[in-house]
Length: 306
Ligand SMILES: NC(=O)C1=CN([C@@H]2O[C@H](COP(=O)(O)OP(=O)(O)OC[C@H]3O[C@@H](n4cnc5c(N)ncnc54)[C@H](OP(=O)(O)O)[C@@H]3O)[C@@H](O)[C@H]2O)C=CC1
Ligand SMILES: CC(=O)N[C@@H](CCC(=O)OP(=O)(O)O)C(=O)O
Image (cartoon, rainbow, N blue to C red; front, side, top):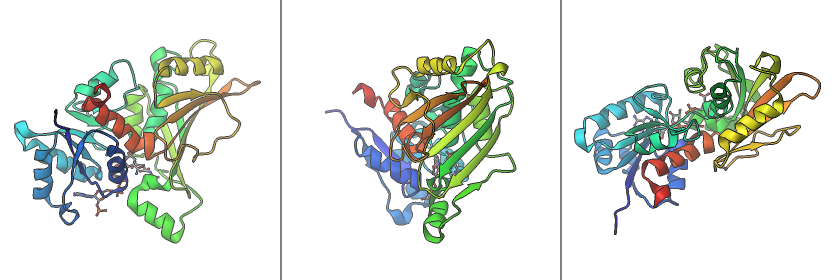
């Protein structure tokens, strides 16, 4: 009998860690946990890392950087790493954990030592933009503006507590310095040649997300229509289990995919105007975090081939 791979989730009690832990119960893996009282104890965490084949980091950025240094001190016994934080998503030494990004990305993830799990907002934005840039219809220098709304679970434990105890604002724009931590990640992995404007917002609902990107069709390459954009996305994501290209709908609720690991992409185009709106709908904690983590864990450990 072959042994099951061992996984340690550093930050297992947090929002993302708990979700990943729950989903792991369906996989043929052994979960290595440490006594909750010692969950921030460096010695206990290092022992857990040494016992694991794969460590999933579900920590704030600074703690994630420390954890990566800690794993490196194990030398040949260092485990493979999947990081859920923002810390390494634009680092060339890490493989970006978006299997549907481009041809061969799933194979790169499968063999990587270090994989960064994509951000929730970047998952939607990159999924919409990258195939259009790669196909040459969207010039990399196009002035992209991205609007997005997230459920409050996107802000982790502190935002969840704020919304669930005091009742947070119904709707709030934030990141208004225009320097949100996800901008470099979107810029790089969408293949853009110009920094996008990104305006996130949060609503008084637990989970769910819509990312939307308006386009002027006359400023794309060639006489492109909304259905051309739809067809490019459909062709790119054909056969993918987690990403679906859907027909236009007149209204979209951000919560419709709460609890799911799927993402829906749409192209909404005016009948009488040369304008389009690209939308991605997902669960910020599903395809935007733990659903993607599960895809990456399965690829890294070859669980799909078992
Ligand atoms: N929520 C979301 O939608 C998404 C979050 N992420 C990313 O996942 C990571 C975790 O976020 P999230 O789960 O939301 O955050 P939470 O605040 O819910 O959880 C973070 C966990 O890490 C623990 N922790 C903090 N510092 C240390 C340390 N030095 N050693 C061990 N454990 C520590 C915290 O413990 P304590 O609470 O006691 O401090 C907590 O249990 C972040 O980097 C975030 O960017 C990624 C995608 C989406
Ligand atoms: C509503 C809210 O606050 N959302 C978080 C994004 C969620 C998160 O932490 O993002 P990643 O881990 O995916 O990078 C934020 O804007 O910072």
